[in-house]
Length: 213
Image (cartoon, rainbow, N blue to C red; front, side):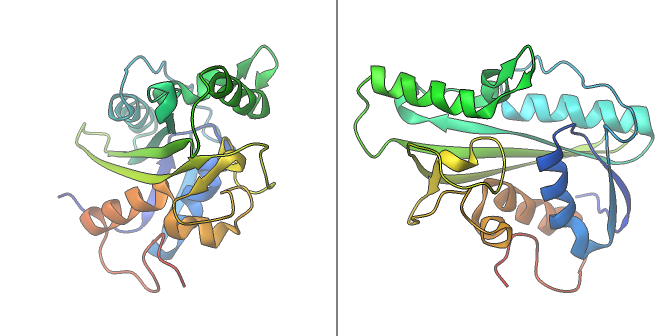
């Protein structure tokens, strides 16, 4: 597997929450991150029906446009009683004419669960697919998951997206209630990052991304 040791890396996202989490996770590895938004790169159309397909679209577009390695994250929440929805369309459920409204999106998930009279626990999982792409077209893909359940009402002001309604398996707090370090230890993104680091990074000081202190 091709290695990446330090240097500058484009985070192929315009989502400030994702950019922040990825920067935190990569910091121990001496990687300087810059977002696609900071570079003025457009958001490519996500036309695939899989997390892997959309992650590849974003990473390759950013790598070609910037001439730098680029890391994309395509992620979402899959609710079992909704047949895995919203899934790859998670961000679309939050779209409004005024921008993304995740409070409304969480409400829509719960509304559909209520209509379906879905039994408790209402199991779900967060899925994260990371794609690391180089300007020459090579890439590597890593998939991570976090099992849990959705709850109502949403709780906590940390995290982003659907975090306030997701309780990880074995836990009592939502991702929105957890401190960032605690979430990083068990999240779907941390799971994918552990696989990325094992494959593409050399030794680094401190703990691996996502490991508990």
